[in-house]
Image (cartoon, rainbow, N blue to C red; front, side, top):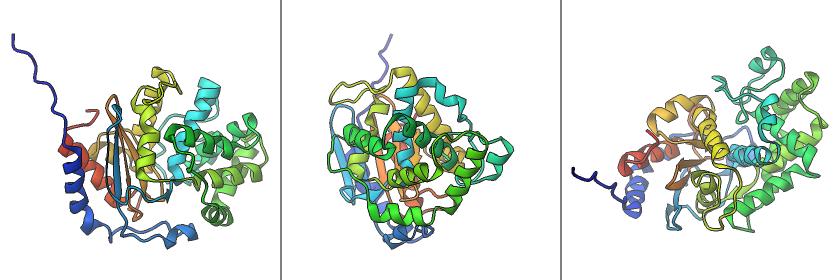
Length: 313
């Protein structure tokens, strides 16, 4: 009986070069997240991409060393931290289903009596912040320290100008928080939760740092370079599943169809995606499509899975 062919190791450096050239015409087509004034100052022309392999190899292209605001990508870190501390009890307060609605919608939350559909929409992320606020003196500092640890980078920090800009325009998030408070699903003061959430969202990383930070989820919950276990393999699997079904706002189905990887996006233009057992890849391009995902970044990841023949399907 003949032996099965072993999968070839892709030439990641050459593939990133190809992708960077291909996305250039897309960089002017998206729109930056102008509803957060500080983010509107970022040029749409930027593009960076980085791959962190679990064996320690790294590859990058373009603006992969440029810091940017992670925004909703930090929801993944907050969820991982809360899940590592509280376990399955968090699902008593937040669901695990795609929302099918914009990430800042109140309609579904009202109908479902203050229990958010999943941890990656704003309502669910605010519940995670509330859970962490009950466990830590300052939940945003806890998320920041966690981000520094998994990225192995002490320079990871808040962008306080972005945090202030987000807090000053957080009217809808205040409404979401007050609604959940009314339903009894927010235990700490609304202002405490909103302030912590806005600072958390302002955390900045480079693509290279973000890919390394997400690699523990590709390594079944264990940090590849240190061996420290953040989550058990089963819990890491569950978070990857949530990323696939809920991680890219209400475009998760289309993203799974096009890219085929668990991912978490943010309106700062960043996307973190995982090839379980192999690597984490991060891309940044500030121009967004109508769902709030990076337009060029989504295309770049689609081309990445095509050119590498790597996806979960």
